[in-house]
Image 1 (cartoon, helix red, strand yellow):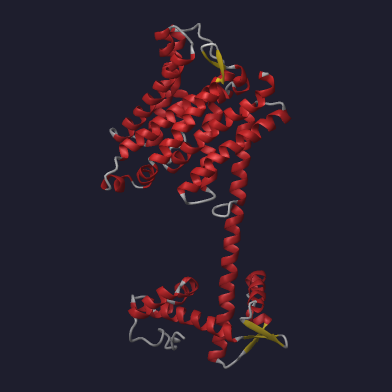
Image 2 (tube, helix red, strand yellow; image 1 turned 135 degrees about the vertical axis):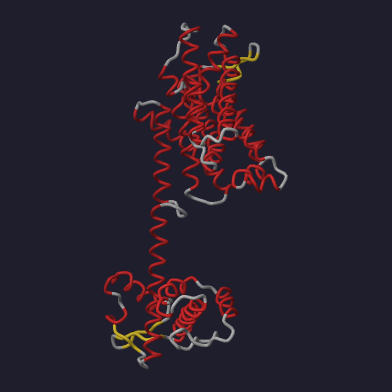
Length: 425
């Protein structure tokens, strides 16, 4: 019966670990403390050694209590080094976890050499053995023990995030503002670090050090590529932890490899996917925004070129070669076709002229440009230096900003070159 349900329990264990670590990992990424999970996964060793020496047993409860105590001590040391002795935070993390890990090795080799430390279990965990690690209530089999532990930990993490959402949000982004608002930034920090310590220890036994560190960093980092809203980031981070656990199990089955390692590989794939395709900060998203901005600027330049020729030389139509920039022919060509499609310019006998909507838009752009030139000149910029900055600002000036500039120039009707500033229609 256990064998039939084994895949379900393994995937559920990984999903609970991924969701728990993903929730808290988003805050660690936000606070630039991503390596804290790595530190805690090493710092639990002296707690485990001391728990064994005091209890003389390798039972679950003393090991869990000792490991949790080791994680909390590491968190306190890191915070003390950073806050009281002004040691940089990443340096504090490095000092604390290396010192505590070394202390754990010394204690085990000196006083508990009979304790078996399997390096592969430390690195990769024992998630494949989850279905056979049972929890008994008297004579009753309650199911796999790691599922119960991680389920309780996930519920506690979710409760902390929901109850202290506002406090954690303000304390993470602006600790000084949190203090002024009556929120104890230090208390919120220790609540979060305590939750990270317990979660790391709970996940460590089942999934190992590598997967704990990956679950605390990669889902949060991936989620930040998709949104700037913390609620969305927290949700995505937890979901990515769950998806990577499910996908990792099936990858491990297909590759006949380490389940924890396959879960980390799935997380790496999710991060690569996010880095490439996330609309907010993904590479393709950035490329698309830059392309849209380039086409928009080229469109504006075409409209301004037609209006200026119409204003200065009374030329109402220009040819393709006059409007297309030789250094950016593809962008200019796309801009010209877009203007025709939107009805801002018309094509007649191989030449292009402004349509009525195009005249309105071009006049607005010209007004923005000359207002900026006059404003920059009033600030002290020489007349021959105002064109380039005005050319950059004309594309991003909305109606409100235009009115503000107009109010700052109440009696100015021309730009520094003496050209008339068009009035708003």
